[in-house]
Image (cartoon, rainbow, N blue to C red):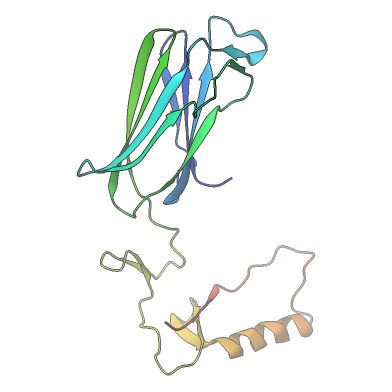
Length: 195
């Protein structure tokens, strides 16, 4: 599943639960769901006059997203779904954000503020380091600028000609060394295009 943060509000107790275990990318989806612990019949939640709002702002207080629900000419009556609505967000790496969710239902108001930092992408190789200026992972050796397409080879900590890497991988399979019925480690090679 893609990166997400799941918020759930128990309408009876007013208690929030947050599951951010799958929050791992700057492109993330916020889900909002409701439960009613007083009437847990078939997991159906009934609404009287539900309205809610998502407000995403940066550390300087600039509003990046402001979404109110229900949409025009819509009304929530009930749901048996885990999540009623979602909001797609695009964050910046290493930046702080605040998501405020406000809910009004049956004359009761509740809200939650959730602080988050835009996560870094997964580190592609053990030897690479984070460059704060470029906001990305960098190889310990600069990419060659001779116009050739290169692939990173972690075992030698160097850039290798991508065509040679591809030919060598094909030769391994053609020689019978590649066996797809067994779990075998793949070489750590990434083909990057020259900018």
